[in-house]
Length: 194
Image 1 (spheres, rainbow, N blue to C red):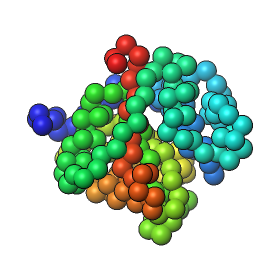
Image 2 (cartoon, one colour):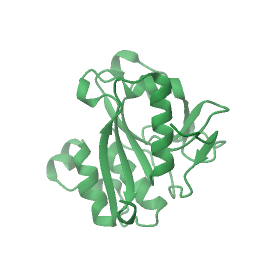
Image 3 (spheres, rainbow, N blue to C red):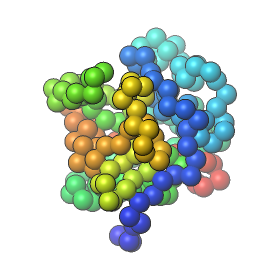
Image 4 (tube, helix red, strand yellow):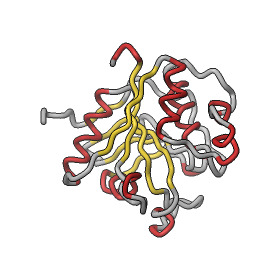
């Protein structure tokens, strides 16, 4: 593994950090990515949902990201980071951030609207977030999480609407009770980078 910089922030930032309704977090992640690269064509993130079932229930499957993002010149690939130590998982996330236009994680969402965390809820509530950078000094990732209410947005960070420690991101990333959903990421590049 090559030496990684102590901090890294993606050059392009989402135009705004919208707050989602109860569902549709995947479409909010997509809108954030498209707005960062000046390719956002829809006012409501839910309008990116390509199928009726998705629009109705608000779920976004991993392959939906590829389906939608490819229409705007992006290539996305799904992967998992398994059977590695916490240190190796953190290093892998950093590498992904440095090599791609955005990195989307599927996490167990135990966060309540007031910011408190419920471990039980995190086992059964899936949620998509986007990582936009990291800082070793603070041991944190900079994240766009569309479920975070506006009054809890962290305006002191250079990118994203919330920062979470490496350990908290690892906890959330491996929280879901269904094994194939744990430690899942989607790496996004423009089609010229593939």
